[in-house]
Amino acid sequence: MMGDSSQSTHKPAARRVFITGASSGIGAALARHYAADGAILGLVARRGDLLESLRAELESAGATCVCHVADVRDAAAMKTAAEDFMRHHGTPDIVIANAGVSRGTLTEYAEDLPTFRAIMDTNVLGLVHTFHPFIAPMRKEKRGQLVGIASVAGIRGLPGASAYSASKAAAISYLESLRVEMCKNGIAVTTICPGYIKTPMTDANPYPMPFMISAETAAKKMAKFIARKRRYVVMPWQMAIVARAMRLLPAWAWDAISKTAPHKLRF
Image (cartoon, rainbow, N blue to C red; front, side, top):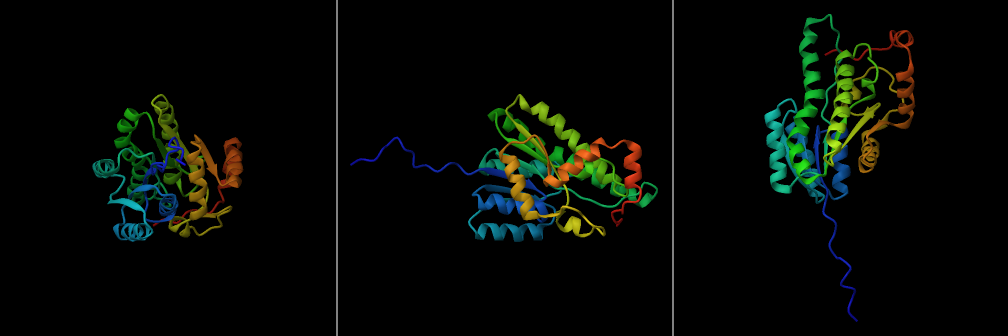
């Protein structure tokens, strides 16, 4: 007896996911998560040795990876990485701008001025440089999703982390503007504001970090929010409650609470 020819035997096409800051922390965890789900990956990071190690790990498990050693502050390098990925695999379904840096900064120190610039360039302009090459192809196809990893630190200014807080506040506003700009083109924009995630970045913090979760747990949660095309999310849920309270506090109350808070280390 003949089978039903109307049933397709074709597997759904693999998702194409482009991730910056992929060599460690959240970026590497996201790469592993999407690789396990069968995605084709475009991975970008500054540290070539770590990126190569991750590529070898993922490809040994059967994943397809296109890797580029690049700094998100370099618009030309990001354009090259994006075009190379699209030449081989087409327009990505998801672009995750995850690359970010964090340092303690104090305005009175002249030696901190280059650090201010590096943080702003990486955490804000890095988003722009990551997304820019993909917008025209996504607009043409009327599909795609741009994901920016911001931070709870962008909700209120944290003492000793003025550059980082300012950069993440700018990232949140930038992503909101971009979301409205892109909606008419069929392109989704998702802003994710994590609290404390255990990564090399947070390992340097010399103070208690409440509600911390692992990078692997964070990646799983982020992937769910991305799949649902959430516009804006704070995670984990405990930090979302804290973030709402932070927004509501008047300036005098925030000053009273935060003036004795421990500072991020300066390097």
